[in-house]
Image (cartoon, rainbow, N blue to C red; front, side, top):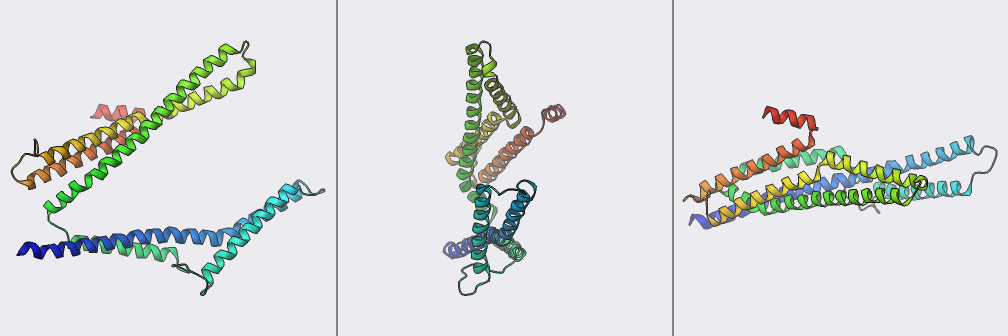
Length: 285
């Protein structure tokens, strides 16, 4: 009799937490929209003033005794006209009660930020009050892992593509340098081409050594494979998740996955450090 009674309570808890999350996401989007609205309302007069000052400065210091080129006049006129129309539309949407459809008309951004802080605080308090048992949280944690694995693999493919692109650029530009050098004798007509190709090779080599996309892709793929291996072992009930109590298996699984994620973050931090700092840290370890 107790299990059916718990189902509505669990469903109510889920609905409440989802409602709080939707409120937080909605407030974040409203803050972004309001910032764009304020920027459009107060930024367009600044653009008009800057365009007029620029045109006047060019007239005084460059074309004082002659007519301003038509291109300059046309560009200045277009900027002033477009900015003026944009400002008029923004002003009507901001101050007109009949024509405005804005949700946060005349609302300061700081007030929306305060509402967001209060919504996040309500979400934390509600989640704390309705916190499910540890076994339920561990089970839900297991269900969220496929998304985390997909994210890690997506980032791994991203860095792998960057690494392959850099390598192909190095191959092509290095071969082009040799081809251009051998084609021209003397290489005077192709000096500019050689300089550009050499600059690209140096830039790509430096970027690959600094950002280390190959190492990042390897670490992300390694973490994703390790998490998936543990998830499969838990699903099949094999070692080390072969205990009789499911509670122990879930606790061990959550601990292992969090250790793997912590190792991944540590490897990312090591890649972001300078080479000397990495060597010093390895010596300390």
